[in-house]
Structure formats: C-alpha cells, structure tokens
Length: 275
Length: 335
Image 1: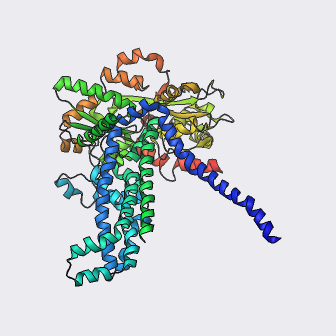
Image 2: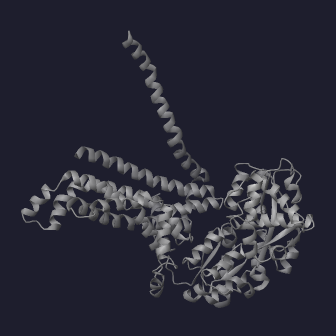
Image 3: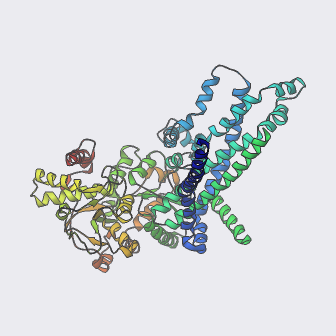
C-alpha cells in the first residue's frame, strides 16, 4: 500500500522537479545568453561587421588577446614551479606559501588594481626609477598584464597541488635513482601525469584573464585604442548609447567563454577517464 | 566568408601592431560624456594642424568622471591636455601633483573655458507638471532625478544653481533658502553616481518627473530619444558651468608635445570648433557662432559660482565636504 502511494507520488514529483529545474535553467542561463546574441544581431549582419571592424574594437580584441596570451604562459610556469615546490619539498613556511597563493582569490580585484597603482604609479616608491628609464607600467599594457597575472595566478596552482600530492614521489624518485636529470624527470615523468590538470588550470586562467574587469579598470586609464580591453570596451560602448555595439562586444566575450567551457568539459571527461 | 575572416585577422593584427606609431600623439583626458564631441573635433584639428605645419598628429581620447580622470593623471597617466567639466579637478593636478602652475586659468581666454553650459530640466512629453523655474521643482508630487553631488560635478552645479536661485528669491536669506533647498533635495527619487546613470534612471527606468543635467546633455537626450518627446526647460536664473581646459606642463615636456598641445586647445576657440560645440548644444564665445545659433539657446541670466559662493575651495568646504551643508540638509530631509 505504502509502496504504491510512494510510487504514485514519485510519478508526478519527478517530472515536476525536472521541469522546474529545466525552466529555471532556461530563465536564468539560456534566455539571457540567447538575448545577448539577439541584441547583438539586432544591428544586422552589416551592423555587426561594421562594429567589429571599428579600429577601437579591433584594438580592444587584440589587446585582450595580448594580455591573455602573456598572462597564461607566465602563470603556467609560475604555477607549475610553486606546485612542484610545495608538493615535492618540505620546508618551513610551506603551508604559509600555500595560503599566500590564495590571496588573489580573497581580495577584491579592485583592491588588487589599487595596490599595483599605489606601488608602480607616479606616487609610488618606484616612481623616480621608472621615470628615469622612461618606463610606463601603469596606464599602459604592461600594467594590464601585471594585474591580470595577479588575479589569475592561483588557478594553475590550485589545480596542480591536490593532484601532485596524491601522485606521490615514487615514480620521480625511481627515475632519479636510475640516473635521470631533473629536467628529464619533469619532462618524462611529472608532466605526463599532470598534463590534463595543467591544461585545465590554463583554461581557467585564460577565462579569467580574458574577462577581468575590476583590476584592469583601475590601472587602464581607458585610453581608447591604447589601453582598452574588451570588458572595458563594453562599458564604454554602453555609455556611448551604442547598445548594439556593447552587445556585440559582449557576445564576443560570451563566445570565448563558451569555447572555453567546451574545451573544459572535454578535458574533464578526459581527466575522469584517465583516473 | 573565408576572405572576410582573413581580412578581419589582418585588421586585428594591424590594429595591435600599429599602436606604437611614429606620428606625434596627443592624449586628451576628458569627462565621460564628451566622446562624440571630440570624435568630431579631433579630425578637424588634425586637418587644420596639417595645413599649418605639415605634421600629421594622432589624438587619443580617454573619458571618465573628471575627478577620476584627474586622479589617474596624478598617478601617472601621461595625458597632454585635459578638457574637464570642473575646474577643481584641474586645480587638484596642481595641488597634488604639481603638474601645472596654479595660474593655469589665465593662460587661455575666458578663464581657460572655451565653451560653457548651464543647467536645464528635461521633462516628460507636454511638461505635465508645468515646470518653468527652480521654484517649481518643489511643487507637490514632483520627483527629481540628478546624480549625487558628492560624486558628480554635474550634480554639484545643480545644487549650486538651485541654491543660488533660492538665495535670489529669498533676498539672500540663507535660512529660508536652505529650508527650500532641503525640500528640493528631499524630492530626489534616485541619486545615481554619474550623469549617464541618472539619464538611464529617467529614460529607461522612467523614474521621476524632471531630470536635471547640463543644458547640452538635455538637448542630446532629446535628440537621442525622439520617440519619447521629452521637452527642455531652461530656468530664468541659472548657474554658469565652465568647461575648463589646460595643457599639463610636466607631461607635454616629457612627451615633447608642447606646441601641439597648445595648438589643440587654442583651436577649441576657433570658429570651426565653436560651430561643432554649438551643435552639441554648448554655449560658446565666438560672436559669429552665437549670432547664428541664437535660437538654440533660451536667454537666461547666469551667475558664476565665484560671484555667489566664493572660490571653489570654499564651496567644497562649506557645501560638499563630509558633514558640510549638503550632508546636513540630506540628513534633515530624511527625518
């Protein structure tokens, strides 16, 4: 008796739960996403093309790719080194180092931007040194790269540390005993083991680097065609009453994000199979 | 399609790589709503300068709230010239960064303000609340929209315009004027942080009955949203809002752009540039242009901030500093 009533209740509970889940997903995720593209194409194909061919837009796209293109390798190398350090060696301050790595996640990106501005701006301690050599860091592309590296540096480390801890050091020790050099150990033993996690970290870093707004907005100075990244450009277009243009830029960022997610999903699947 | 993609990639590469060009470059740091204006003036100046000297310039623009722009310059943004909507923000470049001399105002005509504006009211179709003066704004059931005077230069003029008009109305009786001002402030439906935000509140979110902003901006909004049939009201007494410009001595020396920067700012006084400015509904000084555009600008008796309130420094201390008059009036209005 009770069995049948449960079954009959389940019969309508299940579709209800599933459909409400689907409806929520549609409302909260899919519809806004589609709306971005609808709004972007409201200007027509010609309008999209015209907006994309704008020199300022092209520059923003190029600059965003440049910043991400520099940030990712820097954080890839830095992250791997740190992860190697904390999982393969034990030294005083190891835990502290691991905690410090998380600082960029803990502080607001705006604070990160301000920190760099105070340190490397014209009122900072390095001002006269930078001035002498005529080096402009803040309000120029190097500053954008610096803050982006800062806000996205934990991703690779966070991916690698758990994996490398569980992997242990046996294989590497064996390789060393057999006479392998440090580089050989890394290249032939460690890297094949961590490559998927590493790629996953890279993808997350890239996603963050492309989309970063807060920190970049503080150090950019928003000079059109010079220090304007794509997320900043969206805001400027919006302020110019160029809504279609803003949505086109937003759609472009969304496309990058979707591409990133697809690659990420693929890697996750691959990672799951490997383990 | 394939060709398009290729062309796009090439354009992209060109755009990024062409950044460090050999042509002399001027960076104009400006307030946030001036982009379209300078997008039109800059090509004219480049052409003019080329004819005069044979040199081809490139002009870059940076736009933002003018206090924020000033802050960026103090912290190292190498702007050659500033075109702001608030002279205090240029003063700060002298006080905090010593980037230009204190007497920068005297270097160009009209207090270094090649154009000016005043405050105007944007009302909904048909002016349903019958607004024609500052005093009308406190009529029952009138909701106001303007940005926060703490963060926006635009709104500081609104505050000073309202106060100045009240002082005139009440024969300089400060108490009565402040009482009225308190009611005026209590009628504000939303305090956005900047001019464009206030516009969005009024136009898109349909908040309030009157949007108060620069006359130039009011006209631009009317042109921008013709289907809404907004109307413009310029009150009979009003505050003069200067749009000061200056070259940044320290930066032009470093960038080697002294001659170009000065020529650029001087050009803003030329008939050509003033025509463009008038088209963007700024009031200008060139007699020919004034004559030609008379119909655009309703007559209003303008007072300057200095005439009524003393120096901007005093204004800042007495009205806008933390705990000063504005804060007091806002707090009382809430009670």
